[in-house]
Image 1 (cartoon, rainbow, N blue to C red):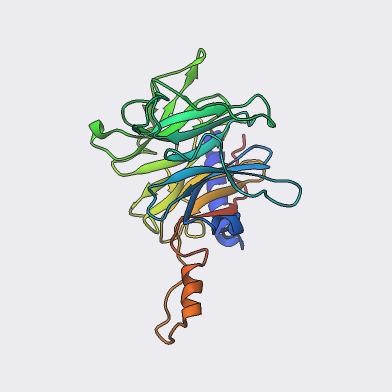
Image 2 (image 1 turned 90 degrees about the horizontal axis):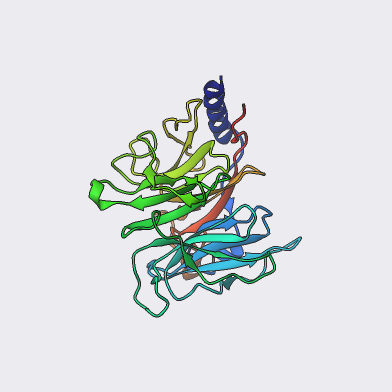
Length: 315
């Protein structure tokens, strides 16, 4: 019965997304538009702290930017105390907000300035009002000589992330490292209902591990270069075949880096969608041209949010 319920809820979710007047809208528009590219948003469970990656035009510079929210507005964005020197991306808060995981190519040895491969790192703080610690590398067996990306920690402390393993003659895959007896186990790839020979990356896993949303690249049923797909855990504790989340949330451009606020059933994600195009029937003025170039949906990486009703699975 649980498996049937999960499947029914999935189709209800997709129907609701496509039938209701629910569409992605810009998130932190006035802030995001100040940067060439912004991606991979993370929020605390209280939703009054946000961290995102601000990147250069070419994507070769990336820093973690932090903001807090009072009752009515967000603060001025600031680079986090430990970021701004190396390539830092893909933040994720622990449930209590006292640990922040992220990905970086910073050297293991503080005496070195030579960048390394991408690893998962974390910082901690004693309380919400305290400063962040110095970054710590998560270490083996999670981090390897390969590139690890997009960490997500669940209620059970299991760690899901993206791994690029060239030795398997595959592209990026989603892996899980279970937390047992106070330590992380050797990471294992998720099954073929999630991974394929193509690119699968940037997975958000619900805190109870009942569903997974991630990006698949150039699949036959896709709407653009990268689309968001969803999979549920069935009664046998297996992931169901991933399904495209539909054309309302996905565009004909890259849609990636999902993050879900499970309390409000709101999904935040990054998109390179481009709404602007030239009209062959008229000639743009210089001001209109600049307006097109500087618009929010101009093909740069931007943040969006959207309500997803009935997303949470039920017994």
